[in-house]
Length: 115
Image (cartoon, rainbow, N blue to C red; front, top):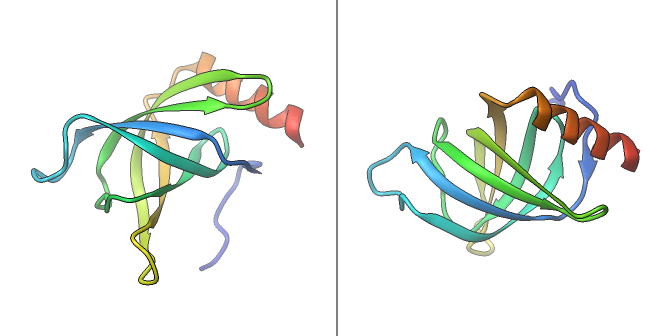
């Protein structure tokens, strides 16, 4: 896969809580816990999940960043999904949308502090 990322991204595992906002009818419309982020930028996040989330599914996500501890809340859309046949996990690339300037600045500051 070609690298298409335009924003600085940090590799960091953080707890992510997800609520499905819109998408397939058979997806749970409730909070789904224990996702992990694999990396994050101010424009998106890559997560590991045990549920297949179809492309274009819209989500509300809460990310608990580690150091300093802080919570990021944003809306995101599934851009890509990859299922691993060796286990029951998937990885998904999510792109933030309808994101407040405050949240973008908070993410920028956090990422800058880690680079």
